View 1 (spheres, one colour):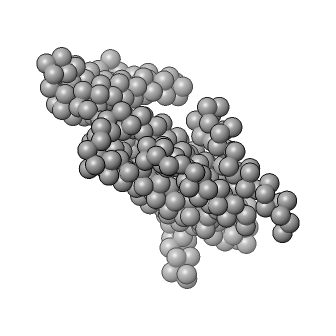
View 2 (tube, rainbow, N blue to C red; view 1 turned 60 degrees about the horizontal axis):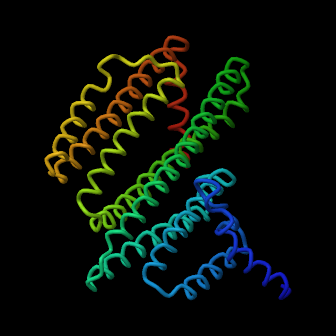
Length: 316
């Protein structure tokens, strides 16, 4: 490999994040772990770490690296899928960056430094990154669901046509998609836990009033997003759809006014959780309804499909 190519690769890795930030929620992924040239990415980040001398600068750098890992996860999922080896590399490095940033904050505080301002900034960035990562996972989940639905339709057509060869091939494909979905859900939950752990460690250093304000703002944002999502889907919300949310948030604001910031934060988080619970209940109801419709359309289709998939699993 020529020296000119090596120099261009290093320069590109060093400069890419500076051009990418501020334009989109995530920076450009650039090289991903699936590339044989990925070592350029790691080399560039190592150089940037060596050229960053302050603890605060290093903490901010780790968070910026975390954003790049999320961008890599997005690209790998879109281009290679859940089973790609590079996905695990990007996820592991994301966890390392989150842990490193949290560790720097803890060490600065142990040294007697005031880290509330830095913690607040990093916490805001982590919240944005958490939202971006959740969207990446949600997009992939929907893509897998669409793929499974398409294959299931093709399976039904193949059965009606009596094409046993096609039926066998489609059953294998459906089994593979189901396995991919199962693995994906595990990866998603593990990454979510890592993010929550890092956020909690950093949030501990933000003063209680700011944390309460942030929790209330996030709860209100969650409600608006739920309303917007319902509107996009053409769902008419009941008059009391947010009754529990409104009650909890009103109590949170009341406690905040009394300067009970810890209580206000807890109630605001409960209010936000109440919306997520409603979403889960609605999804379950819709799934049950869809299942009933499917049974009416073809009573024996689901049982036959499950038996065939079990046979494939037993052969494996």
